[in-house]
Image 1 (cartoon, rainbow over the protein chains, first blue to last red):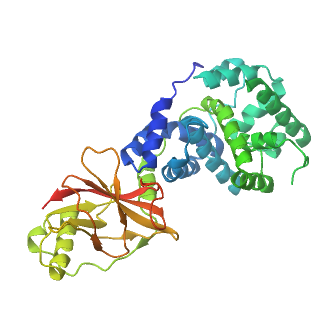
Image 2 (image 1 turned 90 degrees about the horizontal axis):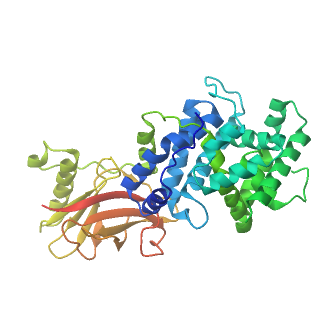
Image 3 (image 1 turned 90 degrees about the vertical axis):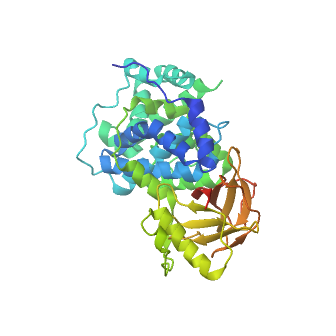
Length: 185
Length: 222
């Protein structure tokens, strides 16, 4: 159930992004075929509505085409670039609309158990983050995983967890500071 | 804006990348990431660090028409209508949209200028109708004329014409496209792919296309 996931080929993705930057439509289509389901899944988890998720995925791929020249493999992976584009678009959409959404129930609550976190391993960065998350206080880990996966703001998290806003902010900051210390070489 | 104004900027970048910021604070941090390169890099670094968390979310198959929407959104910007061609040549009329476009282009062309072109490229957006025709003339000119609804060029940009010879890895520029059809220098060989990209005003600063290729077509002998 919780095996590590097969990631789209990182070198191939980076090479396709370089081809997109010079206007290669076939590369763009191949990149779409490799990444659309993954990016749509991320957007769906944040927006909770298929049509909104499709809008976020659409906007992200339009940005990929228009800004592929800005992708720099020396500064981050193709995965990080693509995932960031779709997450920011999905967050824009839900923050603009507020969070009155229906019609879709996420299949599972964000699961931050050690077993579930195994899914993120996939490559060296994933293994490192997994290791560092394991070392966090459980409360810090939980709010960070929830905020990232579901795209929840400090205030929404505080409501959801029935915790004071200041406590949630403090958990997130302390958790992020610990992650930074753990991930730094 | 923030309840801890002196907080570590790297942690602020982390909170933004995590998605935990809201409202005015989120907008302010986004603006700062665009204005301040060091801060922008901190956000990028956090995007990268946190990305494995996105693998905890399952895939979801997007709607079947999503690619078509994306293809449409990336092929043209705002559309300006061109005058419809007045006449077409009879023997082309039963053909495809491309043949009709060539016919229309030839008809208009023959009225203006007697010597017939030797080859033609029909330039289209991805999966779209013909937009430009490029005629290779006997004197070595490449003549480009509109054949359909041309994208409106955003302010501060030009369309640039490129030739990608068969088998070549990189196109070479044939100059910035004028607003109306006009002769362009240097006739490329049959089989060359003609591309039009959107570039900063005056043309690509690098000698290679930097913006999206909005139209393309292969030069074929007539």
